[in-house]
Length: 134
Image (tube, rainbow, N blue to C red; front, side, top):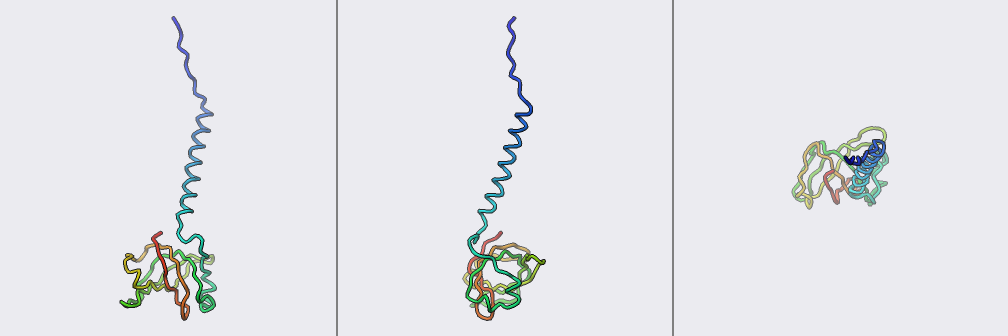
């Protein structure tokens, strides 16, 4: 009676292949997550400089990642003023952001995280130019 050849699997080779696939998956996740960040070519605002002297940043554009905390004011022609919480190297800081009436189509609720492209305007007010949910 003829014996059938059995293909024997090398468990070490299977383990290496499994770890390689897992490593590629994790690496791909971080690469695509990093590339999906909007405004990645724009410099982040230095919150400590802004809080110390906002007028020194006037006329410049920055990006900021923030969590909506409270709605402070609303005017149909001007837009909505929100207080947002920003993560800094020393902790969390609250700053005001004015979302203009042109961006009223975006639903903004407390606790939501957004990426903002902002411009520092008169009196150091932070005016939102673009925004996307994080």
